[in-house]
Length: 148
Length: 135
Image (cartoon, rainbow over all chains, first blue to last red; front, side, top):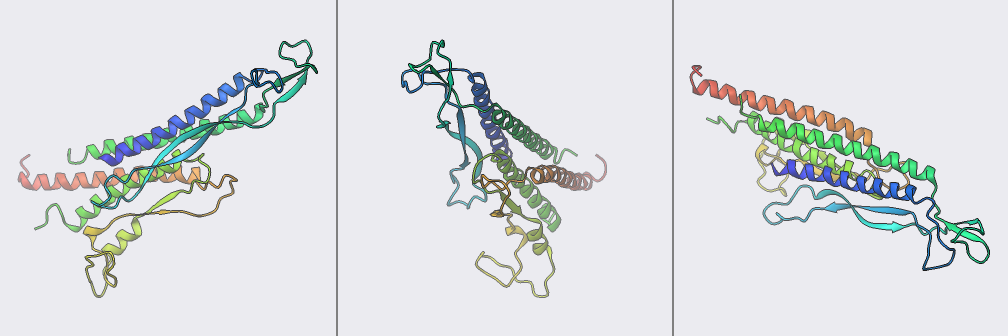
């Protein structure tokens, strides 16, 4: 039975990770016009955030008793990175964030990029839901064994 | 008399175990579909089962995985999980093929349900015999 719950947890980890990615993408798009003053560490523009995915390896808790067959246990976000690309400079002297030369720093966010990543994240989320449903189906079927 | 541990029963139970493991492995592959450098794992069971059920001219039972020459016994049959290093067209080094995983997921689910049903039928057959057909 433990196998099924592990399977649920693995799919859930995928859902969580993809959901976090979607949140970050939304945040990036929402902050597309969050400005800053160029070269001013106290007032930097928003920087695009990217999740770093890594697979989880299960602790081999039953090592010694019997070698576990499979040590994968899903995915997790280990870090949220900030895009190091330089900000986009726009000439707008009347803007409150403009520097002495009249430039305002905008985040270097490519909206097409974000939309493509959003679709990937949505599709991956759906795939995890499908996997979870399959696990549910077979778990329910297993409980029917012997019921006649 | 082996009511609950004949060859068919044992094969069915092993098949269920393998199905649950395969589900876990595929869930892991799908969860990691966007993880850079992730390589998928695959479960090998059907060919091992076939080998364990096959009739060889000389049957030698192995009692240790280091023994060779005999056929593996059904009771010790375990699915094999291996890392697939096959290459990919993707630039992030991930080799999960989502279409393949989805297809196998559906197939595994149906196979599991069929095997569970078959096992259930066997138990109800036994139950029928035990009660002498009286219910």
